[in-house]
Amino acid sequence: MRSLEKFSRRYLRWIIGLSSIWCFAQATPAWAQYQLKVSTNKRYLLKENGQPFFYLGDTAWELFHRLNREEATTYLQDRANKGFTVIQAVVLAELNGLHDPNPYGHLPLINDDPTKPNDEYFKHVDYIVDKAASLGLYIGMLPTWGDKVFKDKWGEGPEIFNPKNAETYGRYIGNRYKNKPIIWIIGGDRNPRNEQDVAIWRALAAGIVAGAGNVNQDKVMMTFHPQPKEKGGSSTWFHNDAWLDFNMFQTGHCRFADVYDHISHDYNLANTKPTMDGEPIYEDHPVCFNAKENGYSKAYDVRRAAYLDLFAGAHGHTYGCHAIWQMNKPEGKNLNNPLGPWSEAIHLPGSSHMSHVRSLIESRPFLDRVPDQSLITAALEGGDRIQATRGKDYAFIYSTSGKPFTVNMGKISGKEVNAHWFDPRTGVSTKFGKFKNSGAQPFTPPSQDRDNDWVLILDDVAKAYAAPKIWKKPDIKN
Image (cartoon, rainbow, N blue to C red; front, side, top):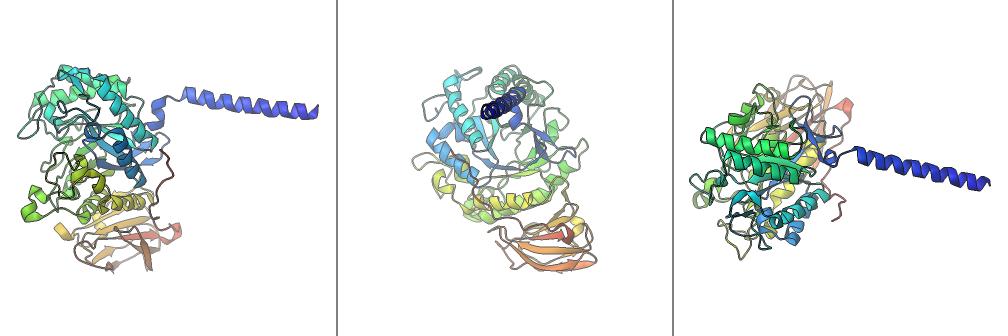
């Protein structure tokens, strides 16, 4: 009898527990598990549970358009394994995306009409979005490339949008993906020329918010992807728009772009919003579009952009590769990429080096991290730039070419600091000393010259921070 009573009590507790789980699931809307929000200090992004979200993106612009499901799975698995968190991809793609069908023979729109989406095409987009979600990845979704608004001097178009149909299309796509891990990116590599262009982008944003079912924006995370300009980017036209959660700019594909000036421009604006470089120099890209004179960019170039970007105040960073953005295939058209297909380019070293970027950033509390050039006596410039950032009890200082520098100590807490050299190529940290946290202290990186960038880590001894861990492939199954 006692055994029966004991079994009954256990069974009852099991039923109650199961009911509680079911009730929680019913009470928590599907979109909430993916929801992102801006941090209280308006510098970073947070997950719904309040944990920091590090935006580490890859530009896979042609993902929906040019890869089949098996190929897309291969690509997404590789990026998840390397610690990327966001995949930037375009629904109405750049490379003749309205008239060149996807691998299954489907076009995105019926008769180029934004109010008549082709459900068969979007089923393929659905598959990729869901596969990304299963691997812990967000899609940075561009509803359209900008040439569908205006072609400018390049782009295949055709120009199909006006404010009315942009709002309708926005409602459709916002509703279709409202419960998915999406960061919305409008703009598509175009800077508005006039008020008509601005009105189209605003109508598209309004449609997405309305389609997602909440006019107060709290189910939507959105930004704007512009072309390069002297300073700023999305902030030029939309900084005070409620739908713009964080700013984005593009420094483009030249070496030694002044990313810190772009960051500082947005960082110091009133009505504070996070900011980031959504398209810096790509790996294996003709530098300044002139391979004959400048050659092709390498892993060093993309590393340099990442550390300068983040240490100057960006909330996240985007990597890119010339073969990957266009999902180049051996038999397909390309933009003169010497390495051929995307399936080989995913193994270029620069993408693996982004894993180390994430490991470093996440190794210390980063919601209170700020750019602080007063940490160093001389910033240097161009290819020798020194960039510094700190939290309350730690500091990171990046030497672009391994040049020595002098630190103004006492900017972080602690009487003494531990010092490590962090190798951006390997992710290995080497402790080399303990120093008084006062006065001016010179530091000389382990090596100098091109491809010999280093990060100095200084930690308050009392905090006993561990060295950043070498990135390991996450335990995620297909």
